Length: 190
Ligand code: GLN
Image (cartoon, rainbow, N blue to C red; front, side, top):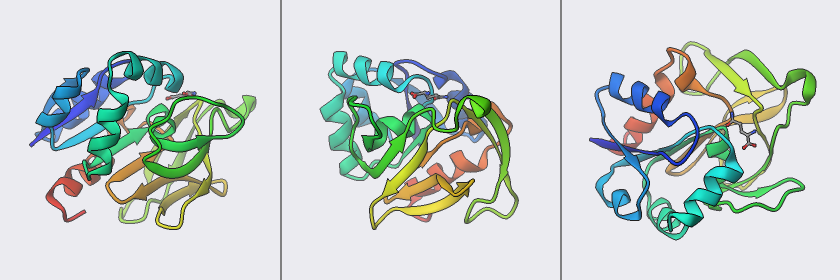
């Protein structure tokens, strides 16, 4: 199976390494036609406004929406979560609007700009070590969005059909189970 990693900005190389460790073929996606060649997509962490701006310049906004709305399994981490969501608290920035959620950027406050936490995630037996870096949290979700993990009362792992979005960075640790969840979604058994 071939997994695309949106490679406009952010830590796409780390996602590539995790996916390759799981045996996936990986391509870096920068052009609309590359979306036709993939079975799943990862949108990395980075800076959501930069990712959105470059996606606009590369003509990727509508092709991404089309593929994601037609069921392409997709994982977004941190800035990727923000880019997937439908709205952002107190900010007006381009988003794909395929995840029925409102996010708050840099939500944990100055003291907690970056922190690590052990998270219970529904569907996983052992906790996930979450590395949060200027991370978002979710303030509102639509009725069809499942919350798979929370931290301090805020959803940090959610699934909306074919979209899996998380606030932290599994690609920066030795964690592979989140990417495995994405690969299971391709096979339709996740
Ligand atoms: N703070 C960034 C944003 O708002 C996200 C940070 C990250 O992806 N680690 O886009």
